[in-house]
Length: 420
Image 1 (tube, one colour):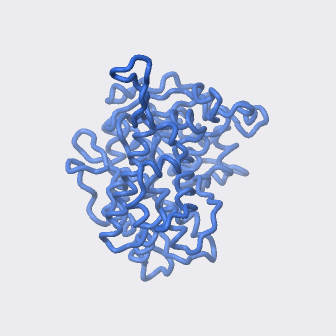
Image 2 (cartoon, helix red, strand yellow; image 1 turned 90 degrees about the horizontal axis):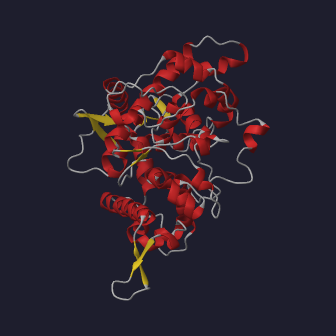
């Protein structure tokens, strides 16, 4: 989360512009190349054309739950967004439970929602009282948060103590929940959903009923909660990402933005920046869009080598061969050794990760601009209507398709991180 030494947030009303400007400047300054031909190749590739239409909206938001009110549902989506991190724990999570980071957070929230706790774990008071033990229980991690060490004075005896990577994850999640509660209670809100709806209504545009100003909503969310303050630095300048806040806005639009369902004012998210994590930049490297060979950040030059760009672009997971490649042995299923077969990605420093995430944001802006003017005809004209959130959804989802989920490495950021 943010600290006293963190870079300042952008001026009010300039968050989206600041994301685009800072990320473009970072990519250029780091000399990460994005070639127009590589963009065209991606847009005309087999992997893109065969999977885009059915993956473009796949942001993992389907909720098999019944909600008593719109506030209750907004609350769950908001908590899912503020807890949308844990990328660095993917391998130990797969080993322990068979789930990745995002699905683990979903399991936690389903458990919190269905809990019979008197206060209700989803409320501000519930967030205050939730403990590490309860979080570990709901994440199905109780048996994986201890380390064994030899007893200091009794030979042959081992003792257990809290520790290890999954205990660290439980600690981070509990910390964010407890901090969120404190902020909500001090501001007079009963839960995070109530706060977010108030922010949406504050951004209501007088000239457009039912439409909220994305800048106003982002300002309210980011400035209030440190867990949304996703800001890094490179060469002394700030890099603004705000992945989780942007994800929240688009998640609300996907859920409540359908025709006839305007119970709350919503922003237009078609042109907001992508929600840059570790998956999307990694996929852009594997698809040949981000060229790291001449970057001024030396550790990034060979971070993903070797990269089989042509094979990746020509892959079609929708064919029987492609879809059957990992059937029968799910790569992360509990009890299998599938997690051991996942390609190991590079571990990056915080600054290196911010540079790569920024480059991905700028590259996606370039991809969408290129798509709009791409010379396509016939059944491919849909490419010209590509939007940034759709591109984000596709890149994030295609990484889980067929052999790609096993063979294509994703970077991880070292240290404790609650931003993605």
